[in-house]
Every structure is written in structure tokens, then in C-alpha cells.
Image (tube, each protein chain N blue to C red):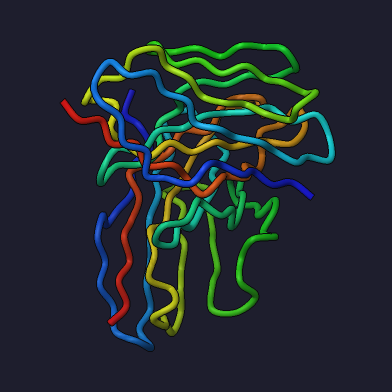
Length: 113
Length: 114
């Protein structure tokens, strides 16, 4: 079956620190991979995506590379800001049609000034 | 272009009552998805609908839960005879005609069952 595993949080970093949030997946087909971000009291916003192996998704300084050999899609940012504090969800959609998403349990990021 | 809209944002019900959650997709979107987020957990897929059709309801509990997306008006997620375990955030997402379009999420409805 399909599933997504994320590192447990919370992750607490100082401003300008380097961020890595690990995400690994299990899928029966050729999934597309996503990172969504959820700010307090809000819905999920798409952060970035990659639709095939070796693709790199990037947005707002965040990036993640689709690694088929390690079934991973780790999220990275070189220098975090206080405004990046949120919950980050890794997700996959199996196959070419994004009909159903499978989400990880989320990783809460706290960035301190 | 307004985003996905959900109402109410917060809903309180007593055990045994009915809860109705509404979702208006983004303009031009014809696919609607409902997800449930329990505290400290990720989102779990419930149902996928197109106008007047349920395409995939594999994540819906077999009893008390139903969903519709009529030709006119918002999509409705209906929970009958709510129990405390139904307390959660319910998110709606929509996508366009192209099934490779990304899903865009609404702000969610937080249901509390007393």
C-alpha cells in the first residue's frame, strides 16, 4: 500500500539555521511527491512538488529532491526564518492523477529569533 | 480568484446531533476532496467527488457519514448522530479539470463534539 513517514517533531531551530525534515514513502506505482505547509489555524498550502524521480521541487528557499533509490523526499532550507514556523506535511499521490493524497503525520517546526 | 471556502470554521455539536460541513471549490474547479485531521495526526483521505458523482469513498466510515456535490451549490459533508470521536478538523480541497492539477485546500472546519 501507500504510506508516508516523516520525522517526528517538534523541531526547534534558531533563525538562520539549516533545516532538514526527513520524509520517506512507500508506494505501489510511480507517485508524485509533495510538501504542504500549515500555519496555525489555517488550511494546507502547497509548498513544492516533484512528479518524477530526480526532480527537484523548490519554492521560497525550500527544496526537496525526489530520490527513487532511497524512496525519500527530504525537505531542506539553508536559512530558516521565524516566519517559517509551521507544521510541514509530506504527501504522495499515486499515479498520474492526483485523485488521492496520502499524508505523513506532520512535523512541527519552531524557529526562535 | 477566491480560494477554497469552507464554512463554518468552527462547529460545536452535542452527541447525537447532526453536523453539516460546507465546501465551495475554487472557481472553475470540478473535483472536490474531503480529508479528516485528528489531533496530532496527518490528514486522512475520506472521499473524492465530482459534480453529482461520488468517485472514491474508500476513506469514509461506513455509517453516519455521507457526502454530496450537487450540480449547484457547495459540497456537503454530513455526519449524523455525532460522537466524541468525530471531533477533528475537516478539510476540503479542490482541483481543476485536469486530473494532474494540484489540490488546493480550504481553511478547514473544526468540529467539536461535546
